[in-house]
Image 1: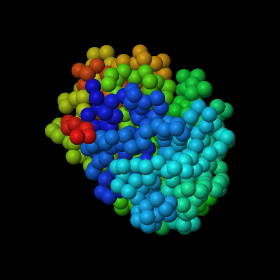
Image 2: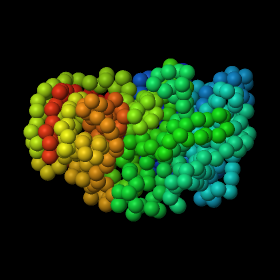
Image 3: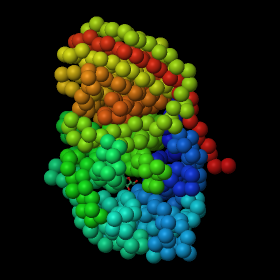
Image 4: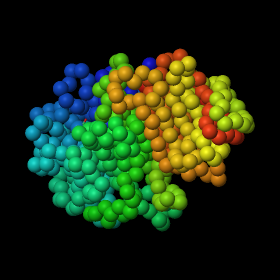
Length: 480
Ligand code: FRU
């Protein structure tokens, strides 16, 4: 039942991706790992040449006298500003040391990305604030200094440094929509070109919102993906202060938390990956042998849409190397309230579909369908939203918060809905209209339930084309 092409730990518990960095031809992935023998979190480690196939490596950082190793980032220190590399270059990890009494930021360094040494002067940044964690650090070209964005309770805080060891507070960023008791976690900040124009850039601030004290709101469905989701803001950053031009916008739940980006990706690419889970039920999901997986990596860009400048997200080209046999259907027309099964569904497949839903109803796809269960992905032309309904998707007994329906606003493009749906053993990821809307959802259907059906409700729908690719398993090698 392990996912075939989503990253999972070799065994036991994982949560956030950490320390994402491209270095010397390899994509490094560190992650919050708590193997059975640990009393707190460590940094697990894996590397990849293509972000699809992975090699697990021994844990990079283990808990010590300062506490457990919580989330953080890695930078390439090209000019040895930290003084750790005798004038050469190397990698510096900036992470949270966590104990019941405090959270503080610490450093570790490595000249090859494989063997890590903790700095003897740890921690380098402390506070009385009980929520003071998840440093994301990057080099800010204009001001020629390191910038850190840190989750500090109900706001995000910025710090600057010449050498990664000494940090000076610069500003804080909060929003007036914050509900009491909610905290931010795992921020990230990066510039992106608008519509591919390198002369027009905006900064994207990512952060995950956690408010399990307010979980009833989530039950009522009043707060979108609930109070455990990654959001983003589009705005400006001058090296000290971030000014947002948008409300918090959802990145695509319900199961995408702590999404952050790779540093130093070649070609200025910005690639995100998140923890495919939700703190509301992460400890309860039925996945024997391991607990937690990551979302697919997605490449992001900024596009001008009628509603404003928005992030679009799409799966990486490299993922297409997993495509195997294909089968196609269409064009075809569905009358109102019709369900048409199509051939080619399986436990690990990719569906590409172009459809024109008629006004006044909803149409879309049922995936992982069996006699009694299915995950519904559809477009509601009245509400102008894309929805994913997993209320009858399979096993949900483990939590009252799981069997739900989710919506995100989406406009059709001249009447057209383009869906790309990636199905794996325990998940479905949906990218709509070139990545303008996205869902990432865990599901636990019976293994034999692999049907794919097209449906229309209260109005008809024209299906221009539908292609299903079987997907091969990605390689996950263990340390030799
Ligand atoms: C987010 C988070 C982080 C923290 C880590 C601990 O999921 O709560 O804020 O550093 O997980 O594992």
